[in-house]
Length: 272
Image: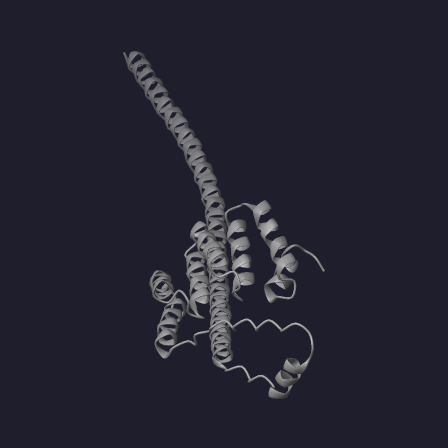
């Protein structure tokens, strides 16, 4: 009886030990699995950290590059604005200088035209009448030159002021009205020249050419013709008609070789 009890106790202990062994192995396996999972998580976290740091560094580099580009663009924009301002001021000064010079020339021409020619030498006239031979032909009458009136000068100056202010439409209208009202004025051809010049300033190159050709046809003795031809050549060049522009410059040099405009034409053609 006692042996049977001992056998039962031994069997129960063996089963309990086996159960304990199974639980221990499971725990070991779970622990090992957990350890592998922990290691894998740490590895993934390390890799993610490395990727984040690399990406962050690249992003910072991109941001720095963008900021540098923005700074450079701002500097370039500022330089362009300065250059444009200087070019505008230089163009304005050049235009004002030319306008002032033109005004002075017009006044000098008007004063010269208003001057009365000196009377003929009576002694020379007596000698001529006493000389034998056929009677001398009477001298041709001097052309009648009408001096510029104060009203004409005022109207001309007012139109020129509009051009100086950059009111090219107003200048064109004012100069055209002047030419229509005073076609025989000493200032008429100059007014017509400024019509073409104002149209050129508006980039109406065909209109500028037509206006200057009207000047040449209507006032063939005008001192503004060389400048008109130069303006025509420039307008032709702006239209891309370089062949016509070259012919106009050559015509200017042939017909008015001593003019300032001819000197500019020579420079444009690359001649010395």
